[in-house]
Length: 109
Image (cartoon, rainbow, N blue to C red; front, side):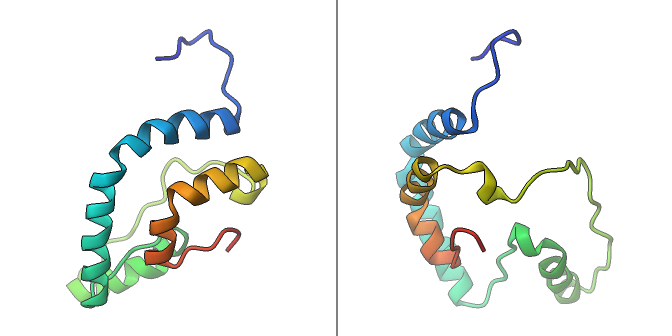
């Protein structure tokens, strides 16, 4: 646990520390991923954050529920690729390789 007076982590160090811990749970996560992939093949809707508003409309239509999707806690930021070095891109790509395949993610899109 980091103390409040600790200097902020660089993005690269944060990625390495967080994902090293996350990767311990990779087997369970992979089982959930396989189940998600099967559900998507059966026609389940997968919401993608980068298409959240459009994908949410599909859910609204399917449920005939048109409650607005609020946008809270917005913050200014650069495109996510601006934060990655070659090292972090490779590291994250290796850890999330299976997710990228199932959901069709490609770096930079």
